[in-house]
Length: 297
Ligand code: NAD
Image (tube, rainbow, N blue to C red; front, side, top):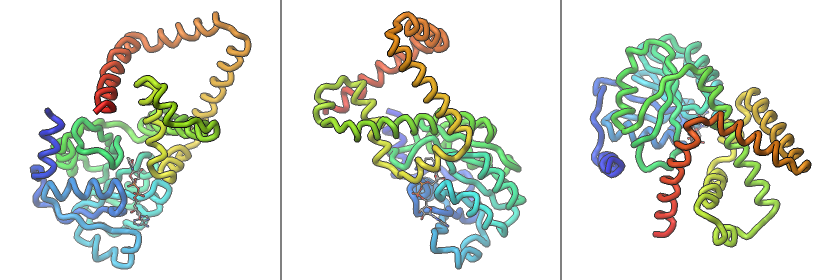
């Protein structure tokens, strides 16, 4: 399968599209995502250096001949750390992996005169390979200088999506902030209700197990990362408040036992999904079949 061929390529290495590139420096490269990108760059024949939290006293030495600098530090520190990168070689590519894009991209364009591009890998560090994963990118400056990087990421198996930083951050309000927040609240609710997980599992259909997995996996990850993502923009809180309002409205409907209103709202949403409702039904059947297969083995 495609997945297997990519993961075996992971072991043997990838084609190097820019063998002339001077060293790549990953700022925060001892972290989770930084390690993944270090591995991918090294498997592709690039020389990688790490600039970690305790390395700033020798930052000039690490950065003076960098061909590319990749910033991968906790979100709340990103802009302050980018501001320290004032003396990069002019032809050096400056990029970041931050889950939000407007602020970091702006900070990179302000501090560096050379090529700039923002990246957002839409995956965490726990993936076996980049096959079928998505990397979103935001053009900053001199795109011709970093086309090789975009192609390199595609050689790793990922597909690329170009978007403006502002549109990205608006999209992430729903895709990340609201979704992570509702998982967080559902987790809090479960912990307070304190059912026996084993019993939930034994009573549940595959779709509920999948939902439990989607929520549970959040709590196997870094609280700081999710706090940063959810609280990264005022528009996130505004979106979450609108959701809360709709939740309240729907509860009033339940209190009124208003099945007619329920059906009316249901029809409205069905209409909004349009052909996608049917498409998602079929897609979820495929996912559930896979989930079922993998939990039985
Ligand atoms: P992480 O906490 O594992 O790694 C961050 C690293 O930065 C750590 O090694 C930390 O020691 C280091 N660091 C802290 N202060 C520093 C400083 N002053 N100078 C240099 N290094 C410093 O976090 P992560 O999950 O790898 O996230 C890094 C970036 O990747 C974030 O911007 C995040 O938004 C983005 N990202 C993460 C994920 C994910 O699922 N983990 C997914 C997509 C994007």
